[in-house]
Image (cartoon, rainbow, N blue to C red; front, side, top):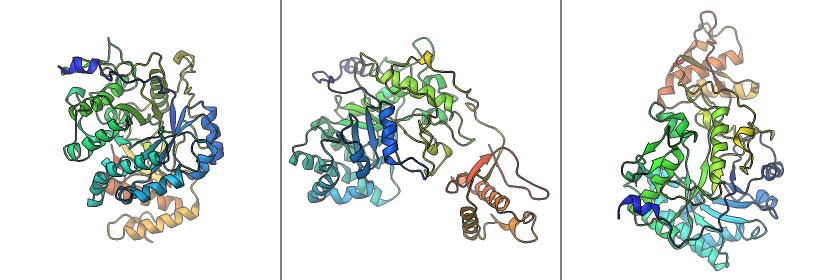
Length: 468
């Protein structure tokens, strides 16, 4: 049977009537300016979300979610997986402490073991965790079964890097280092327990790394069968958006291991509303466009599914509730939120999908969809506390002794005068960033710095820069 026929008759005999298409939301807490859990849960309810996903099993939040109609996803930390994998008593204890006090009044429906575990590959401990993942999932399922809890699905959220290739979808397969050792037993477990393949899927990343070959309209669901579409020569299926293409690559990869009936659940997706200067496309216009179009697709009745699996509900959690200012890495990491820290919307969004797209007010123009070319500096961010700045400057200059980062700030050198903490720190940030940018350094410095295209040099003091 050829791939086209195979995938146009998927999931025979399985009922999806019980799966709600209500949009979920990821509630992360990596910020020092976020509202209280009580206020945050009220925001989630007022937004008419259908589900909420936590990155732990926070007791305060789980109590606040009691009596609501929100389906809840809780998470086991990565660092607990290996211990639980070999110890049923530890799994029982975790369920006793983190599920039983809240269930069923709090509608816990998903127990996720770890977060993107198969993306960590820098140590033997990381790779051991891969092998411990399915045994841990199995023990959690046994713990729930012993408590006669049958409506909590156990799984683990994976990133798209579990695939060796995703294009075209019909050619996709899992990475050889995990295919037989981890993915095959995981799929066996998910199939046996009627659980989901939980996946974090972000069209922003493949588009931003290959924007010359991938249309922005294709990434933002603005394609159709006449423009911005792609035909998979292996299957004959037509793709009008990047998300479908990414999801179907997973479906094909699972089928190649003998599992064509495992349902998909999107644990994270979204689009950044801002980012660093060297991150084109991260803006409010694109974020709102992506999430609004996503919602309309995912709540459509009858369900749209994907080209390989039409007519199937794909439960979806948008990332994320808030911008989180303490996330490290590139600027986009701190700008996936639907809400500002004070609870006001970054842009209008209707999670129910009932609001027509044409009924939204016009969005601000997207002014960074093309890569920026020019010089960029890294300076002190607005509103930074002087005590924090003083400590950061001392730490940076002492730890960078010998590499020249702060040489120009020594008494008598060209950037010593005027003696200003802000100017000195801005120079140090720019100097360090310019020196180590090619090695992955970011202009973040624990939230104390921001990028600028305005040259902060003064007099004979020339600030180092990065040229994009």
